View 1 (cartoon, one colour):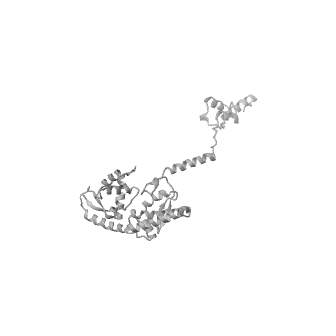
View 2 (tube, rainbow, N blue to C red; view 1 turned 60 degrees about the horizontal axis):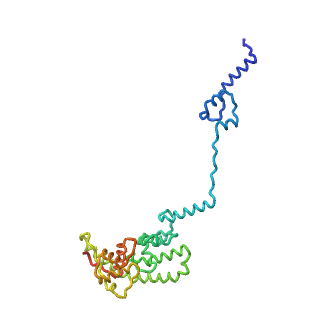
Length: 299
């Protein structure tokens, strides 16, 4: 026979049964103190919103602060200054089309396009264009382009690119400079027509020199002999050409090497922070193409 359970026995049995039931703990047990876990496992405290908040504090998330308009403006200005200080920074470029050829142009900087100012002479985008683009622009101006000599063609080509740059970025050439631009364009075209015959002669002479100098001992220097055009007393050349002309007049137009011409230019007032031999070599080459100098072979 089953023994009847009194009320005391029933209470004890009920308590033992309740201890066997799993407790739904909402807090990660691994992060709780040992005393708290023992208390929870024995069922001595009741889980509430208050004690669970105390046992496991919730990390408060700080809302992200949005920058003010003033801060955004300062940030944009700083970024613009950083980009301006780095000429090689990534940028979107425009293009000039010459026939089917597209060549890069910087619509934000005329100096970078032409190779002037902070970009130095000969370091512009135009200077990196292929000969095809230069020849196409000369043909557009109605000028002969073969053989192509960039030193002689530089003025009319860059004058045309400058005009096209203003028309593309501002819609027209600045009104106050229209007459000046027209005069300089005409001067550049006339100078090219005058100097181009010497380009063909120099190209032929260069070809002949290449044939005769093949196998010549390396290290020999070329001497440059002044022509009657350079000996003209009425000839006046300004800028960095003046010291070179003064040097040849001081030597009574004797033949000279590039090294001798460089030393002479420095002696007669050439002041430059760059390599002086580069300037001397540039103008000697230009004078050869203009017929002011001729190469007199190696020494």
